[in-house]
Image 1 (cartoon, rainbow, N blue to C red):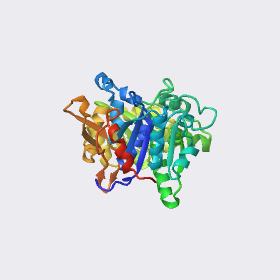
Image 2: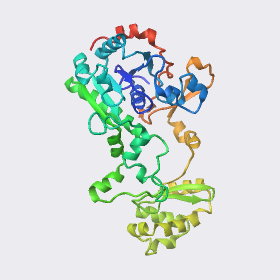
Image 3: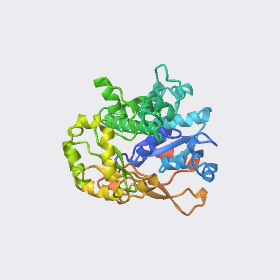
Image 4: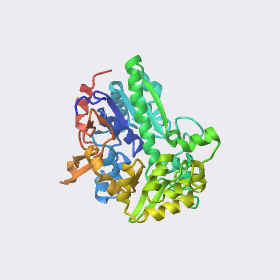
Length: 393
C-alpha cells in the first residue's frame, strides 16, 4: 500500500510486553516509523514470553513476534549518561514518544514531561499505565488480570456459580493499547491545526471501564448492577449459546421479528403466542424455559445448517469456533487480515511468520507490516544514519 496515513511520523517506542507494544504496532501498521528503544542485552520482556521454548531462548518469543513486526530495535541504556544523551537527541527529532512504565519512571531517570516538551515543543508524549499518572493507585503494579479484577470485568464474567472469572485473553492490555493509539492519532491531528505537542496520560483501568459499555452504563444510568450470566445476554432473550446436533450455536434474536422468525424456522411457531414468551420482558423472565424449548428443536440439526438458514432469514446466528477455526475462516482470508512474513534470520526457519493486521481496509487494501519483527539491537548500527535522516523538528 502507498501513502499510509501516518507515513513520515516518527515514533520512539519505550514500551514493554503488550499494552504499549500493541499501541505502537497499530501506529506502525498505519505507516509510522517506529524505533523500539530496548534495554541492552535484555530487551522487551515479551521476547521471552510464549509457548515455544526455542523462540523464547532466541529472545523472539511468540508474544514479541505478534506485536513488533515493522519496528526497528535499538539498544540504549537510559540509566547511563551516554544513553540518555542519545535518547534526548532522538526526542528532539521525534513526533511521538510512547512508554508504559509505572507512573513517574521516565521522570525519575531525567525525562519529565517538562523536559521532554522543552526538548521538542511539538512532541506527542503518551504514557500508558495501569491507573494513570496520579491518584492513590498510580504507583501500584498492574498486570492485565489485576485491571480485569479492579474494573469489575471479572465480576460479570462466568455464571453465578463460577464468577468471578478472567476473560480468556488480555483484554485490558488490548483496550489500553487501542485507546493509546487512538489518542496519539488524535493528538497528531490536533498538532496539524495548532502545532502543539500533547501529554497523553492513558489509564488501562479507565479504558477498560469505558470499553465495558452497558455493564457500566446500566449501573450509572439506571442503578442496575450487572450480574454474571455466563453465555446469555442480559438485554434480551433468546440471546446466547444454544445446543445444535454437533455443538454450540450462538443466536441473538434480540428483536421481536427475529424471535418470531426463529420460532417458525425451528418448527415451534406455537411458542410465539405463549404468554410466557410473547414479548421481550416476559421472555427474559422465562429465559430458562424458552432456552429448553429451543434447544430441543435446535439439537435435531448441525450448527452449520442452522447458521446458514437463520442468517439468511435475518436472525443473527453463528457457530462457536475455536481459535484455530477462527483464524482459518474464509471471511478473514478474503480480506487479507493476516500477513505472512519471514521469521528473523537468526532463527534459520523457512516457514512463514503469520501476524494479524488491524481489521481496517484503507481504500480497499489491508494494512500489513512492511517488515518482520527485529532481533534485539538489530538496528544499532543504523543509529547514526537515523539521527542524520531524522532532521530536527
